Amino acid sequence: MDAIIKQSKTMDHGTINLTDVDMLHKVFRGFRSHDGFGYVFRGHAQATWDLLPKAGRAEFYLPDNRDLGRFHDWNRYAIAYASPSSSYLDQLALAQHHGLATRMLDWSMNPLVACYFACADHADKDGTVWMYEMGGDGFLTDQITREMLAEKRGVFGYRPKAAFPRIINQKGLFTVHCDAANVIDVKESLVGNGYPNLIRLHIPANLKADVVNLLADYGIDRAHLFPDLDGLSAHINTATSRMRKLGEEK
Image 1 (cartoon, rainbow, N blue to C red):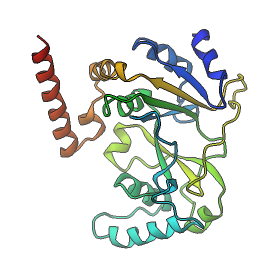
Image 2: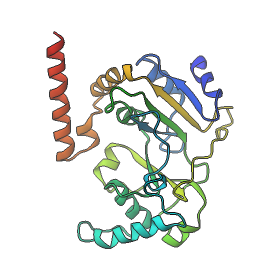
Image 3: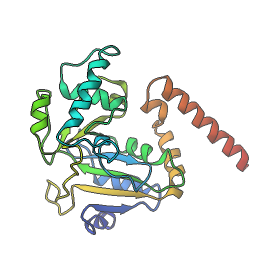
Image 4: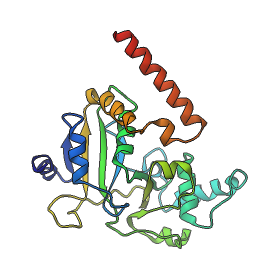
């Protein structure tokens, strides 16, 4: 394990290169969530994707907190489809959950969930699992208002109420980027072990299928992560494709 972790000292953010599926167990024994107060995990199906919330990316970025104005417009109409929470951040999480470009970025306390998102799509591209020690700038609470959020600067952690089935099954939580284009500040781990607070687990494309098969054995699949009819349909479609591929290989 020491030989693996030492690789994480070679860059501003750490990098660990996955060489086989069994190595996942060693990595995740070294970097744990502790209910969101240690390292948390996010999967990217393409290693080249930026670690930014959608509202911070060029095609959606609105400076001077105008992304909160976009959310305000969304929220005015969303009341027709859902009962709003009394918490401003939970309302923002609901918008994020339904695809609005917000300043929130999804993470999971379960590293296997992140592995699924890193490996289930773009089979021909290398993937990444980001491991981030959350809370460097602190955690936000339910008492945060729009005005208070607009005054914040930095990247904060937020643990939403377990209001949506996806949040529960994915063991989800968020970073909140203020402003939306603010990147995570890479620094030494809070526990002072000499390792950075942000580490990239690089997953080669040729290992993705093996990772997905391993996760299926552990019950991590699209039907579990998206507990609705869309998730069930996607899961059945994926299972059908896998069976056809296995039949062609025999």
